Image (tube, rainbow, N blue to C red; front, side, top):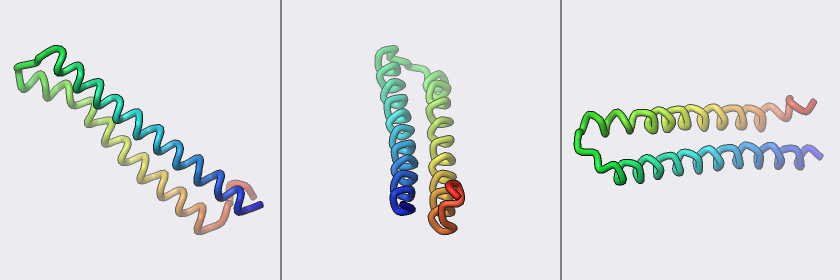
Length: 83
């Protein structure tokens, strides 16, 4: 029973990480398409458009780091959530 709970917990964390990663990839592609469509020439304006994407990448890195730490703690200490 505990093995099944470990498997579901790990699967949930991995699915959450993959969904977030796909969201950031789609956001990056959207910014690239928007940049090409607008044909921006000014470097300052282009840099300002990339800032939200870079902020989301930074947030994603923090989120995945925290998710990894939580998952490793849960697996090391046992499933304290379910007890």
